[in-house]
Amino acid sequence: MKKNSLTQVFATLLAIAASSIALSAQAQAVDVAAAEKLIEDSKCGKCHSVDKIKDGPAFNKTAAKYKGKADAEAKVFKHITTGPMVEIDGVKEEHFKIKSKDEAGIKNVVRYILSR
Image (cartoon, rainbow, N blue to C red; front, side, top):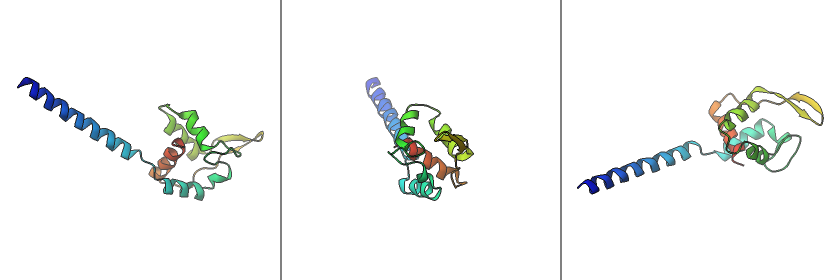
């Protein structure tokens, strides 16, 4: 009986873990269409693209820079919402802020950038 009980407990714990992982992945899913629309509306494409260097870094370069870093989302979120000074062709200027006050939408854009 002990072996059967342990097997049931293990199976239950495994099911809970699998469910948690699935829910976590769902919560982190990127709404690509919404992210691309907000990026377009905010005119981010003037200086950035997914894979080509323009005046600003390509999103895939940003994703590579922050890969595996625990504070990646927070750093990118701060960068696109606070308008820090950036250097373009040797000239310092204020980075444009994303044109949204919707935190969920902005976080979606952050996840989009970091997933490229």
